[in-house]
Length: 143
Image (spheres, helix red, strand yellow):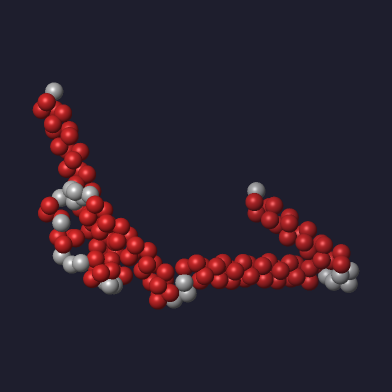
């Protein structure tokens, strides 16, 4: 159904062109419509590409420059949560926070920060799993 509608619209555009150019043939009208669609498609793609370059950066360096401060902020939030929340992670995972200081960690590479965030996220998931498991076990034992 959509191709028929699209084909009908193209034919109407060709007829409109021929209405303004009475000396033209139907082949010239179809050619004009084809050129118009191609120009609109190219304009839309270039506009979208420009938008992506503005939002996400045009090069790998620009992308890293955009994402690195966000990663550093997340790492800083994790350090603050660890400092302010006793039992933020299991004791066996505390090395993630005690291995080096926050300023040293923030000077890490993009990949280093990304790996660290994943490690802390996994440590938190392990803690949550253990808490859930202990609650279930204690409920069974105490009931």
